[in-house]
Structure formats: structure tokens, C-alpha cells
Image (tube, rainbow, N blue to C red):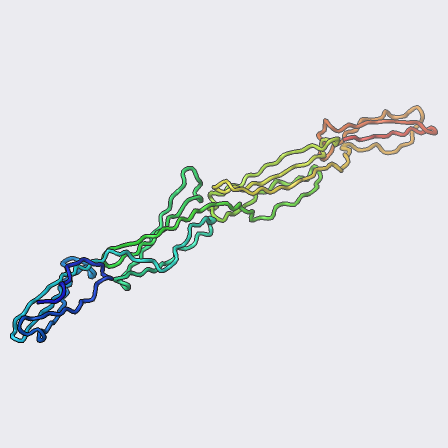
Length: 306
């Protein structure tokens, strides 16, 4: 008979299988001549993973006359422990839409199948209700699975946002001063954006006339703006100030009478002359005529006012 209690049947995790203990036995006739042998047999479970099995342990006590006593213990081994990641899980971050990092590979280990862990990664895009196309979240997951199907999942949330303004790809026209008949056409400018496609980038232009206090109608300023707006509402505005001035004198459009010498009784009537201006319309050009007599000579003076 055995001198110690036979180990009870137990269920243990695959990393906690106890060593098979040594048992002793005695016999009524040959107390010191009993031999105890022990044996262990692994029995795999049909359809189960490699870490789910049974150990059948036996101890056989034999006396010198060949009488035997057998003790048995069944250990049910199971793998219920999840793998553990050995890489640091990336922290949640907020990034610009053109700076989304690549999803890295992570590694993991398992207490029972250190070389049998598979890590899969996935990424899901979640659009924000009412937000533009470049404002969204990326939910990244890594799942480590051991050969018995135990798994551990870690998650990272990346908040993607578009906060960068578009930029013009052409030089902004410089402020300039021009004559009233030489105002350049407002050019069309183009722009680019870090995240929005060209088709989703809008450039609008506007021109506002600002009169100069106390100045004539042909002296004023033009405030020209260009606004580039991306699909998330970020915008960049450029400004050009065109100062318009009228510095060109009117010109007569009819010949000026030549200087003449006439008899005192044959002084010709002072004719009306017409004139035009590069900026003022005809109805805004005034021709004033004057004459004066000096030492028997009649002088005609024509004054043009635009």
C-alpha cells in the first residue's frame, strides 16, 4: 500500500503543470522490499489545440513476490491565458491630415505557445457627422491570437484634422500706382492645399473701389482680393492695392487757329474748339475760351479742364 495520499485529479493551466511527485509504499511481508515505478502518458483531445490535453500519471508499487498496487492521477491541461504584447501600443494622437503615420507592426508572446502567436492588424475610418472629408478618426486594432484561440486586442485612436490653410502657387501682384487709362485686369490666381484635391479647392477674387477723400473722380483705389478655400473651410486671402490717378492733360481734337495779323475791322470771331481726355468722358471735359486786347493785338486763350 502507498504511504502517502495519491494526488487528486486536477485541471491546470498549460504553464502550471506540476511535477510528478515520487510516492513510497510498504508491504506487510516485505516492508523494505517494495519498488515504486511511475509513468506519465499524454492523451491529446480530439479537435483540441496542442495545449489542451490530459496527462495520465501512474505509480506502480511491486513487492518481492510480484504483487502490485497501481495508483492513477489524471491532469487535465488547458490553455486559457491570453497572449501578451511585447511592443508598446501607440498612444492616441491627433494629427494633420497629411501627417497620418503608418500603422506599425506589433509583436506578442504567450506563456504556452511563445512561437505560435499570430498578430493581425486592422484599421477602420469613422467619419464625423457634419465634418468635412478631411476631419475623421482612424480606429486601429492589433489582435494577438495563440494557437488555442485565446486573443488579446489593443486599440489606438487617431483623430485626423485639417487645420492647414491653402497656399497660393503664383506670386501675389504687388501694390501699384497706375494711370486711370492703364488699369491692369485682375489676374486669376491658383492655389494648392496639403489635403484637398485641386477639384475641391476654390479660389474667389473680388475688387472694391475706394474713393479718396477730396480727390477727383479719377483718383481712387482698387482693393483686390483673392481667397483660396479648401473643403474644410480653411482659407488664405491675398490683397493688392491699385492706386489709380489721372495725371494726363486733355488734348484738343480740332486744330488750333494759327496766329494771324488782321486789319482792325476784320478780327475773326473766336471759334469753339473740342477736346477729349484719356479718362474723362466728353461730357466731363470743359473748354473755356477767353480773349484780351493788348497794344492793338487780340490774344485768344483756350483753357481745357477735365
